[in-house]
Image 1 (spheres, rainbow, N blue to C red):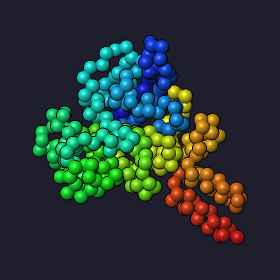
Image 2: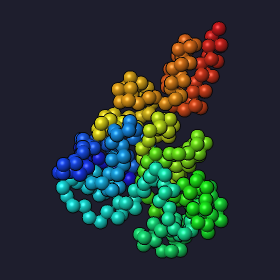
Image 3: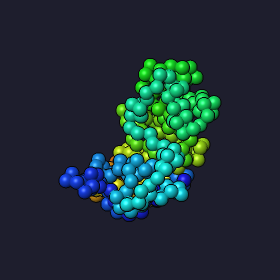
Image 4: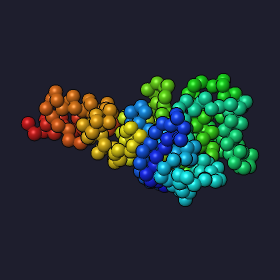
Length: 290
C-alpha cells in the first residue's frame, strides 16, 4: 500500500495561544512493499509524521493519501476505521498497551472489534504466537505474568492480528538490550519479507536504518529535507552532521581503519558483516599485489 504526503503542514493547538508548528511542507512517498526509515534528531518531526500515517493526526495543510484514501486539510474525513486497520502502529514500549486477562484475549481484541469472527481471531492469535517465537501455553496466561521480552512480542502480535498492509514501527527496540534489539528487528524484517508488508521505521538508530531499510528520509526542524537509498544517505557524512546526525557505527569504524592503515575500502559498510567482508577483501587484495 502506497502512502503519499503532499506539502503536509501540521500545528498542534492550531488557532489558539498555544499553537506550535510541528511540520512544514512535508512531501514524502512511501512506496508499497518498501522498508522506509524516517530518521532525525529529537524534535525533528518524526513522531508527528508517524501519526499522520494512519490518520491519528490529520494535516492542517496539504494532504495524506493512504492507499485509495485521501485525507486533506480542511476536509472532514469520515470512516477512518479501515485506514487504521490497514496501517498498524507498534509504539514505543508497546507492552504498556496490554490490558486483557489472558494473552489470547488481548491478541483477539482488535480483530473482534473490527468484526472478525471469533474462530478466525483465535486462529490468528495461535498462528502469531508461533510466528513470534512464543510457546503456545502463553495464550492462557495473563500478559502481566510474562517477561518483558515476551510482553513486547504479545503486543506486537496484537497489532499483526489486524493483518495490516502497512506496519509502522516507532522506536520498537526502546529499552531492550543489544541482543533483544537485534532479535526484534530481525523479526520485523522477516515479517516484512514474508507478509509483503510496507514497513516504516521511525528511529534514532542509524544502525537499524542502515541495516534494514531500502529507503531513508531525514526529518529536520519539521521538514523532510533528504530522501534516498541508505548508501547514498550515509555516505554523505557532512550532510548528516548538518542535520545533527552521525553515520552508523560501522562507517565510523571504517573511517578509523582507513585513516590508520591508508587502505581505502571504497563503498561504505552499512553493517558489521559488510565491514568485515570489505576489510578482508582489501587486505587480501593488498597481499596479492605484493
